[in-house]
Image 1 (tube, helix red, strand yellow):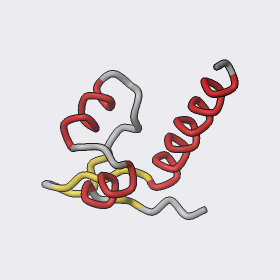
Image 2 (cartoon, one colour; image 1 turned 90 degrees about the horizontal axis):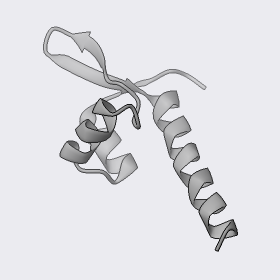
Image 3 (tube, one colour; image 1 turned 90 degrees about the vertical axis):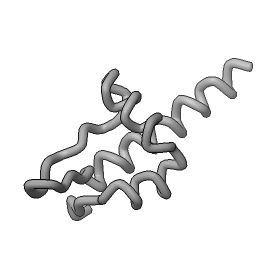
Image 4 (tube, one colour; image 1 turned 45 degrees about the horizontal axis):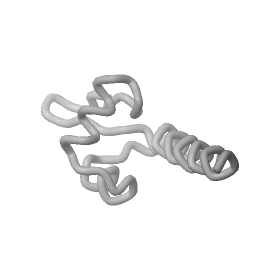
Length: 67
């Protein structure tokens, strides 16, 4: 998989999170860290976002198995 840089709009649409929730999760280490890609620009690495999404889905499956 290529390591495409995703901008905030893409990350928000893909994750379903709000910008404030994304920032809060990022600050506590529960979401991939943004990377500086320019003087006034940041982005997230696509593969890290997909790995985070996989872990969320796997956690949900584990919880469902324990119910």
